[in-house]
Length: 118
Image (cartoon, rainbow, N blue to C red; front, top):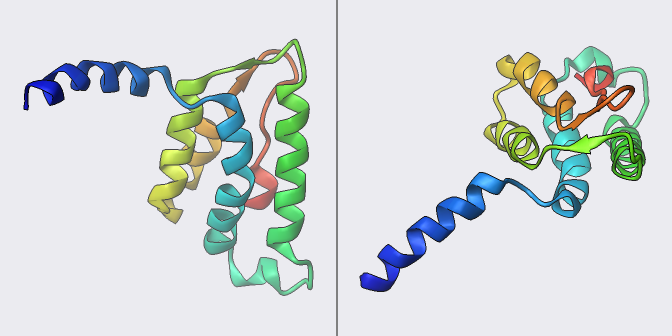
């Protein structure tokens, strides 16, 4: 029990730091696109596009471009919040998901634009 008390502050510190950028790059495209596919209307899927595959490719390319752009600043706490909201899966909260995820990268022209998929 004593060891657990020693680990709790360390765990809190790690959680406060947020998500490493590589983990966000790995998780975001698939997680977001699964959320988007679940939350989009049936009309969006009737046009014949494989929505999820197109979405994953676009999100992976966007995240890779933003992470490689020296003018963009990655916010690990915002990234964690973004993925947490996606994991909650509340389709009625898509505006919050959009604004939170759009703020993972900051700087001129560093917006993670996801509105095309919601």
